[in-house]
Length: 179
Image 1 (cartoon, rainbow, N blue to C red):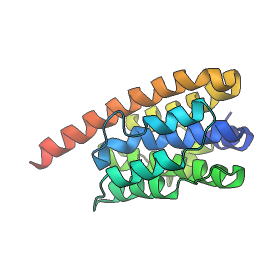
Image 2: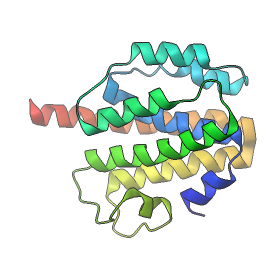
Image 3: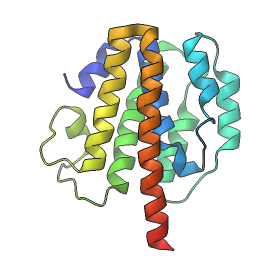
Image 4: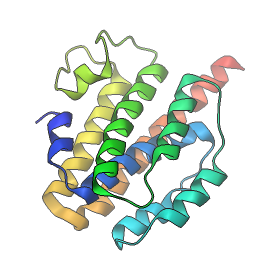
């Protein structure tokens, strides 16, 4: 099943987790540590309001000038508070596109696809490695929530943590290359 289909079928919690996981994996670009979004994960686990945690995250994360950093900041700023179903669906979809685009921008390998939408719809031929890994993570998170409900949340966080470590390494290599 394509990523677009999985997003279309996801429930509100699955969508919120999907969007948050995309954001969480990209947070190193704004100087965020492993704990900056933890209150949001907790609010999804106990189904509480995430508005306060969202405001704290917005206030504690930086901004940036390059395209990837701008995309991460837009994901964070666009997060709906409160989490209304229609808004969460739009946000999760936008986060999916943004996270794939960020990985595409940071991947030194060329991705011949005309856009990340092609990848989201299921065309995976000749994908660059970083984009392929991000696509797999997005699909895995949605499948975990669809198959296990709230019980899949911990495993979704683990998938996100792994992706954050990978992106942090890419960002570090990129900085060394510039410096």
